[in-house]
Amino acid sequence: PDQLIEFDESDDEASEIGAGFALDAYRLVRMELLAYSKEFERKPELVVLTKIDLLSDRRRAVMLRRFAEEGLAPLPISAETGEGIDAL
Image (cartoon, rainbow, N blue to C red; front, side, top):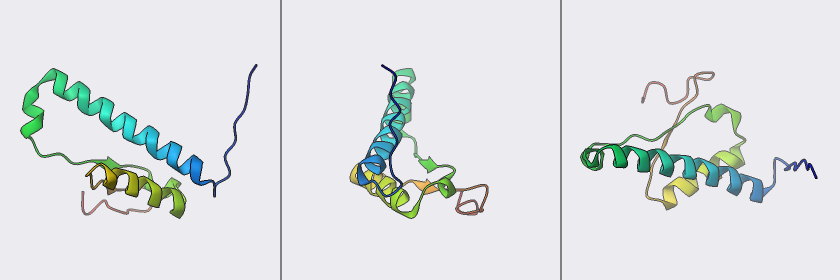
């Protein structure tokens, strides 16, 4: 049967799931790059989280924490608000 699963904005589980999806996407892209060439291991890496303005403060915090747990320090940016654009 078709199901619609809706998460409340304050739902910690939903925040963790969203962060998990983002980390999985990062890992997949990294794996594909390394499969293409091992040279990517030696190159500097910049992880950018785009459209950060679309996340609530809670989801943003969870996203940044989950990446930090992986030893990553992503740069959150927003073209809408201009956040992080100068740093980029």
